[in-house]
Length: 144
Image (cartoon, rainbow, N blue to C red):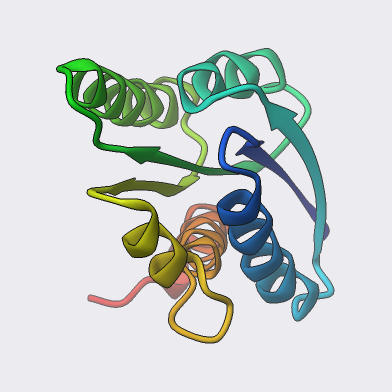
């Protein structure tokens, strides 16, 4: 069976997004039963909207982006609401969404966590999505 996964990537921090996308695409390319496509979002806050709009066309999603703490409460608002809405969508749509939205204190932390050579969080989000997709489509293969 071939599964379609949409990668929704915020391009607000272009270097970080590029690294996260690279890690995601590298992981998904190792699996011949996955057909990935990606779409850009202007920021992380818009990711849930895009996932919801494409929910009927894909079997799973990977959400990628970066939110860096600033001097105001804005960081907490965006981080919390994006995470909450992505979880809500995953449950209401009954589809896996790999969460690769970095919430970092500074750009150096984001660069480290998105580095394709150092445990790229985009790769981890893709793996989570694929693992959940296979579990949901093959419930008899779940571990006890």
